[in-house]
Picture 1: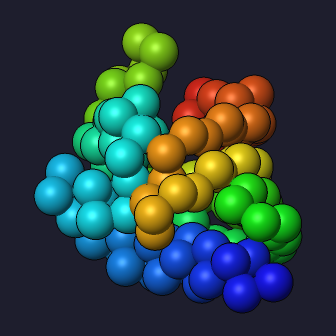
Picture 2: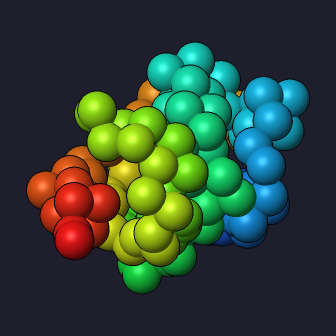
Amino acid sequence: MATTKLNKELIIRFVNELNAVKKERHHIEQFVADEVLVQHFLFFDHLFPGNELLIDELTAEGNRVILRTRMKGRHDGTLKGISATHRSIEYPMVFGFEIERKKIIHHWLLADQAKLLEQLRMT
């Protein structure tokens, strides 16, 4: 039970410390050993500088944590051929994390890309 609680607390701390700030590799790597996830956060910070994750639900069992969240930000980079619109966006995502030695070692992600693209292409 203690491991589950500590892992939930780690994810909450990770989200809170990276919200609304420029994501820097060294800061992300304090929580993440999964290079693909590091790249994901750096890439999305380039597209949506200082973006935030708003936690809707957090569940955990042992070394696995599921985070249902919404990403909120402003589109200031080019994504899928769509130049910066400078629009505010918010769309749902679900992360699955596997944690060992107080770091995320593996993740998976489901994101509502259709909702994101719909917000970027609005006229």
